[in-house]
Image (cartoon, rainbow, N blue to C red):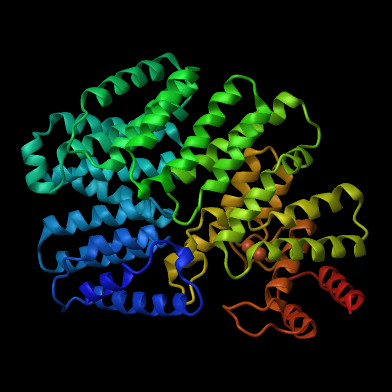
Amino acid sequence: MGNSFFEYLKKFNSPKDFTGELLESFSQRLIKYSDFISRIEREEDPNVIEIGRKLRDLGAPMESYKILKADSDYYKFRGKENMFWRQLYFAGAFANLGYPTVSIEKKSKSYCKLLKKKKEFLLFLPLFLNTYAGIFHIYREDYKSANALYREAISLMEEIKPKNFERIVDKEYLWAHKLISNNYLDSLFMSEMTEENEKELMRMMDISESRSDRTESEYIKILTLLNKAEMKARTGKGKEVDQILSDIFSKSSQNMIRYIEPSYHRIKAIILANEGKERESVDHMIRSFEESTYYGNTLAETLIMRDSLFNYNILAGKAGVKNRYEFFKNNGLFNYLLNVLKIKDWFLGSEHSVNVSKTAVGIASILSLNSVRRRLVRTSSLLHDIGKVVVPWYSLNKISPLDSLDWEILQAHTTEGGKILRKLGLNKEAKIVENHHERIDGSGYLKGLKNISIEAEIVAVSDVYNAAITPNRKYKIPKTPQKVLSEIKKESFSSKVINALAKFIKLQS
Ligand SMILES: [Fe+2]
Ligand SMILES: [Fe+2]
């Protein structure tokens, strides 16, 4: 079973290959394989990890997580505890390349706790601490917690005999050491530069350089070089960075270039921003977005998002702009965020954002909101789904039934959208975006709030309306505006907003 599925997967190289009916057949094959792997009574499948890797490359890292998680259960049932921990580690690592939800974060914490008590499997702990730290570092942006966990993992690694580690964990000691050190370095870059952190950064760079080895994987080698380039870029050594970057390009295989190009432009943007060349820095940030396919959430792609928002924010501060929204818009930020959304969300795409905005603005004028509030409705409706950029491509476009984890991932687009806008200082817009799936009777998500602003309600009703009248592959036949309206009335919106929508529909026809 695993073998034939893996052979089938080899046909694809990127999500772009899923044209026509292929997405449907791919999904069916994936469901079949997932069903197989979840069975306790089955043969052992040696292909699981390779399948996980391939799915990750195709933008379905959360499916990789589920498959490895199921495989770990299979080994647990058979009392093969080593294999249980091994597969569980891979599951977490794949989830960290997708979107580790709150429930995954909790599980990750409990595995670390459990391993501390299990003497014979303690050697797995550094790897588990690493994935747990990664959640704080990449997704929660809590560098202090991440640093503490990485430090714990590294000091544990230093105590371990490489041979013992390799025998139990079945992974190369040096590989693991490098992986954790690189992640720690990156987290240190992002931390507040206290004297202590700076010292630690220097110490880690030295360790990282002294531990190079020809057996390490291409990915780790490149990650080390990129870290080195980033460090030099941040400390203002632009010329040295160029040398490292050209080194990276000459050493990389074609397959890796896809991951390196976005980082290259990201690092260039950092140098230029440091040199006070804001315009050129923006150009590189935009190139960085363009080169990034954002299919899976690779670490590089997550960093681009983080750094770009950070740099745009600094630019706005330096320019002393009053209207931050207009500034970001005029400098291409929203266009590119919406473009990423269009690339990822095949069913709704960016037209959805534009349509929701048209409806929302229409309703806001019918309700005679003043110009400031109308502008707020216009901007937040256009960006209401922007948080979907962190949702992996496959999770966003799933045609098979959604399970509870899928829902958790999808629903997170509300808070993630809010986070993006807050980083840009657009706090009012952020609040509306966070609440655009809430309903006044408390039946919505993420928090089940009852008390939501009229602006959030306008965006919410425009969203529901447009999703239902848009023809798309997921729901096949679009509904008529009248039918949608009659359905919306049963939903939890205030009559004021529903009447305004009814008026809007009338004006359109
Ligand atoms: Fe949404
Ligand atoms: Fe939406």
